[in-house]
Amino acid sequence: MKRRAALLLSAIVWLIGCQEQVDSHRERALEVAREALGRERLHEFEYDRVRAAGILLDEGSVEGEEVLIEALTSGAETGRQAAVGAVLAVRGRKAMDWFGRISSQNEELKRAVLEGLRFNPRLDSADVIREGIVSSDPKHQVAALDAAALVGDPSLLPLIEEKMVTLDDGRMRAYAAWAAASLGSQRLEAWIGENVRSKLDLQREVAAACLGFIDSEWGAIELERLRFDPQPRIRIAAAASQIRHGVTDAKKYLTQQVLGNDDRLAEIAAGAVKRTNPHYVAELAEFVLSDPGVEWKPAGKVFEALGWAREAEARGALERALSPERHEEVRLQSIWAIGWRGRSDERDLLEPLMEDTSVAIRVMAAWAWLYNKSGGYAEGTGFLSSDRSF
Image (cartoon, rainbow, N blue to C red; front, side, top):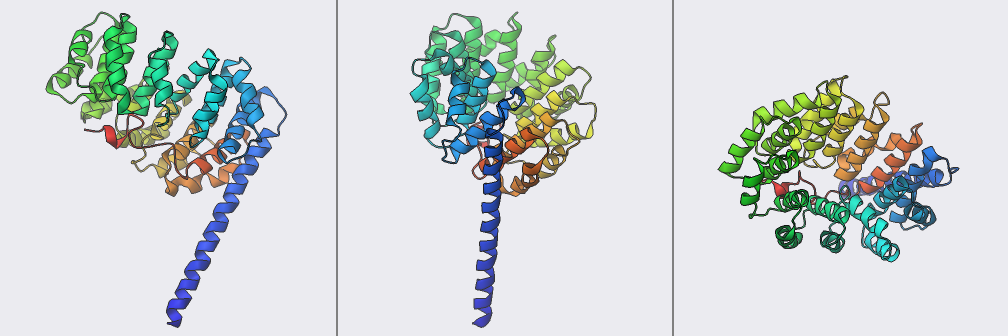
């Protein structure tokens, strides 16, 4: 009996110690945010101040609300985008309600929210996306269709299929087809059949991307043909779709493009990685870290994709990517990935970064440490989700 009581007491003491440690890290994250928010308004720190304001809003404080409103309404595109991203990362209904209060009469802000949803999907954004899909503004429509593809809400599919029938513009139909395919449409065979042989590069590229979400014999045949298209963008799109279907040769091709000497193609290929599969993304991240010739832009895109590959074990790659010797943008994308993945076994990697010499690194680490508690990833969101696998 005494032994059991001693073990119980030890467990309670351990749990209290763990909670105290968690509380101290949370307090440090909030301290980092307040420090960044209080900095002089110099251009190089503006993004960090906006991100810090978003952190505080998410944690229930309105200390930075004025900074967010100013960035959203000042007319500066970069500031507006940063503020939209910061608010979209605020969990719960607070974010969409907050936008609703200040964007009802502001078309530019409405578009900025749709643009933000292309990178920060929210399961409570369906009404905003629907409004964008039926908008008469093509920019709103394109952003809304892209956001619908990423958020993965099947309730949006009937509207997209209905809208696609009424669209006369070939480019817009291509965007609608992409969104419909990613949401599991079974009505795209005719459209894809027409566009895999189109003279227009965009139509062939989108058709190649759509085929990544269609598991059929005819689709596999068309993808193999598109892998040898004269245009490299289309070959890359087809390879990413083939990797999704488990075609080994396509992995070799796409990896070569990411690691290759053509920086433009490397960046395009790295952007397509988010449509492949989680384990390939983790494997590619290791290759990128081992090759000093890979530029920071494609490397950053690979680690951005890793943020969506939650089920893939990647602690080792993320730890190496966080090294001070790495380009700051690669470190920032890796920190974001840890926050978005929401895996508690990676959170401790962020703790020393809240003391980094770079303001940007400290603020992003503070955001990621707090966000990692639940993560931004949700089943069905992102193209690497297991809900979208065959």
